[in-house]
Image 1 (tube, rainbow, N blue to C red):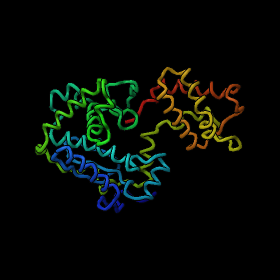
Image 2: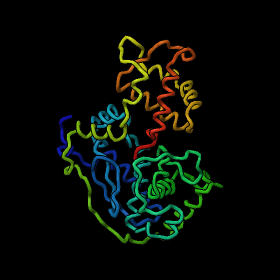
Image 3: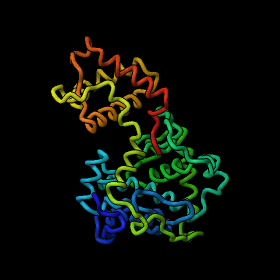
Image 4: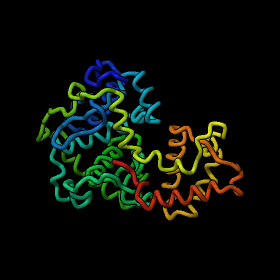
Length: 316
């Protein structure tokens, strides 16, 4: 954990990540798109404004680092072939946007919104909306106009999406049809921009693994102690995470009854509470019979406070 990111000796060439990159590049060629983005290793996935390339997180290039990522963060973003391909298609959508200056198209702005819109620190998606594709988790297309574009592109590019059938009679089909028109017009054309600038390469990141994960946990789970008052730290009591998983359905039903948010957000919140219970080694105060226990009432009151303060929003 004391190893610096800048000291990691990692390479894209010859990795399983490169194999996934080649698959996406082939998908671009099959669509007739004359574009080959460049890739580099950094601390997370991103494609900076004006740059025709994609940054990839370092942990994907070493099995031990992937295990560490899962242990600390609970999951490995892009850690499977399917998951990585979905993210690569999304990020290549951003890079293409930069390469062909597509955000300047008036019709693009009409359908997707203005790229210059400030990115929010968090967002709360309308999970029932038919105005957006569903590609990455958490309805990410709703986060910002540029994410809407990249998500729509990813669905369009995927050879298995069958988007014309999947989104038939939905408003979002207009976006997909428009994007399809745009890229048919770009077949065989050369990119207007070719900026190979690489931001936050590994050599630039003067952080130890310990500091990196401390910052990352603070960013994505800033309130991991919020629900501690609902539980106990008495090690003689049953583990809260196990109890929550065993009674997940009943807990979600009760919280939904008391909290005015969608079931999707309730389920996501319960998953967060379970994760926080594991991290803080929390225990359940008895009695364990939910019908006769004050546990659900305490959890509901705490959940209402959590929601009223806006903590349930998805962190960007």
